[in-house]
Image (tube, rainbow, N blue to C red; front, side, top):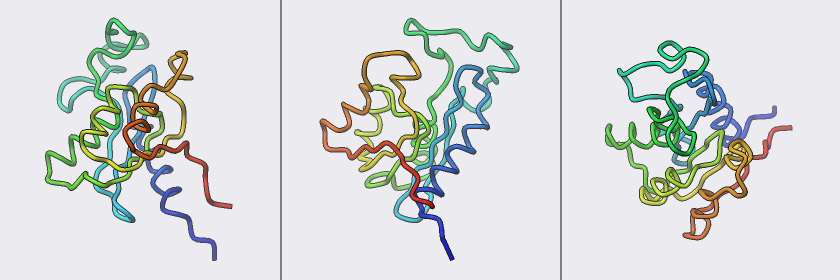
Length: 154
């Protein structure tokens, strides 16, 4: 019997969570795990209880900040980390699975929270059309292990 690897399970869950996002520009999901246990989950969107971009702003989406990003939303990584912290989950030493590599702002949060490893599915730099994945470079330069996810299942 072929049993799926936990990395595959957690990334598949992150991909499913991304579908919950109300963002009209990008749907991103994240899973925060420690070994074989899920600590927290998240997807990109505005703070809970505020609004839904697709409902309130239609096909245009929410207002953009000076860098062209959502001005009202939290990133999937931020939502997963904040929820864990809010509810007493131990984040230090955890692994983060995310469908889009962390931006520089999220990378600073990931490093500060002492997350030890990040798996990402797609490149933030490619998505944004920028030269490099600054968040990935930042994390690697400070000793956080970062890997582009490659499925292990047959």
